[in-house]
Amino acid sequence: MAVRPTIACVVPCHNEEAAVGKVVCDLRAALPEADIYVYDNASTDRTVEVAREAGAIVRQEPRKGKGNVIRRAFADVDADAVLIVDGDDTYDVSRARELVDLLFEGPYDQVVGARRETVSGAYRAGHAVGNRLLTGAVRSLFGNDVTDMLSGYRVLSRRFVKSFPALSREFETETEMTVHALHLRLPTAEVPVDYRVRPDGSESKLRTYRDGWRILRLILNMARRERPSLVHTVIAGLLALASLILGIPVITDFIETGTVPRFPTAILAAAIMTIATLVLLVGYILESLTYMRQEQSRLAHLALPAPHRPPQQPATAPVPLVP
Image 1 (cartoon, rainbow, N blue to C red):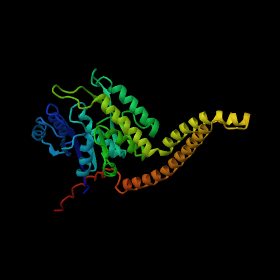
Image 2: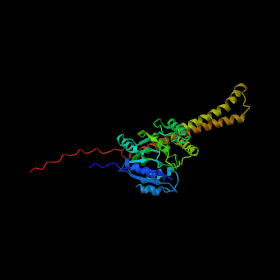
Image 3: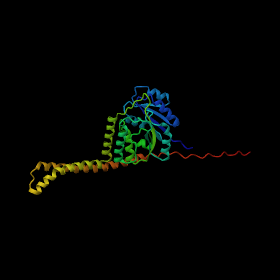
Image 4: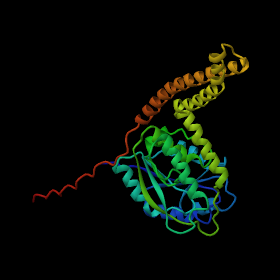
């Protein structure tokens, strides 16, 4: 008899008593076979009680930050498909079945619910612009296979979850997932989903400028770690340019007069050019180390099977009884 694949839903929550009950009920209606985990992230309201009353399995993560919740959930939960959705009822959870089915049919390692604003004001001021800018930065550095990098509505395969390091602490976790998939070239699909305003009594925990800066800083750090030759080439190029700006007048004077009247400037220009050369060499060395780390990450990813559904067994005709 074919074994049905297991599905788990992870709902990170911090003070979401106004919305989490509906999210759990909608998930139960869309995926009745799934285990629904609400990870309470140091809530001070009735989030835990409301989630339990709705039938969710409630677990605690006292360290505040969505990244900490994802790190804990990915370590605890074991399922063939893991659906992540915020507990604020802004995403269309009724599409969950469609996203999960697409993961298995692809098969894909990640299916992202790309947000489609259906009501004016669903995005807070500055969030849409910031999302486009940050997504554009990631597309430029790591690949073009993403349109909504910051979506909190995703379905991930078991091998994605168990090979994902989950190092970020707060709202940067979606960026980390996106870069992980892009850099390992994992099969990913996007499905447009409705994005609506929060219900009354629910407040956004995302701070536009602070969290936008944290995400941008994460992108820059990941570029330094994942694209070291590019970053070091840019830095070396800037240093070499500064060296040339300082050194060309010194060389010109030497050609014209046969002397070096600005000896300290000549030493400084030579030192800067030497540093630029060393920075470039370090970049190539780090690129080799990054390549080896990518190989290990890829092997860890391939250690688990691709998501799939067992083929349906055809119904056997009843055997007639012989009198």
